[in-house]
Image 1 (cartoon, rainbow, N blue to C red):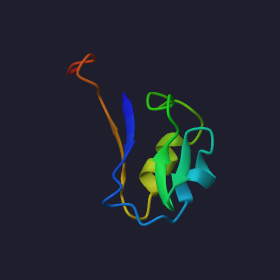
Image 2 (image 1 turned 90 degrees about the vertical axis):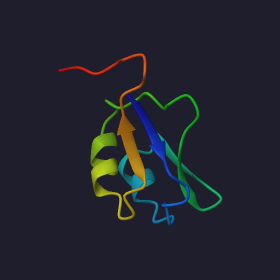
Image 3 (image 1 turned 60 degrees about the horizontal axis):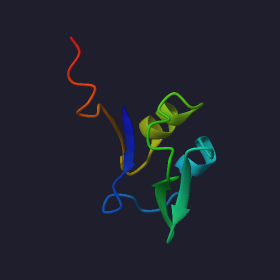
Image 4 (image 1 turned 30 degrees about the horizontal axis):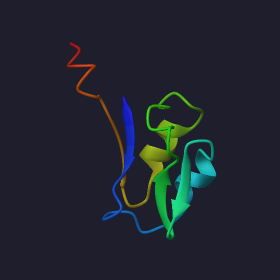
Length: 70
């Protein structure tokens, strides 16, 4: 799984940083994933940050290497 923030969609509320500061930061006023933390989906409150993002800019998606489970 990989976490990403769409800078075109983010408007910089900072909620992600407050909810999961070990994974998110702000760069140029916009939310961003801290380099090297892109796969820390299970870090505390990451999913809560994604679900609660007011601009819906955070995505948690499977990587190609993981394939489709079902």
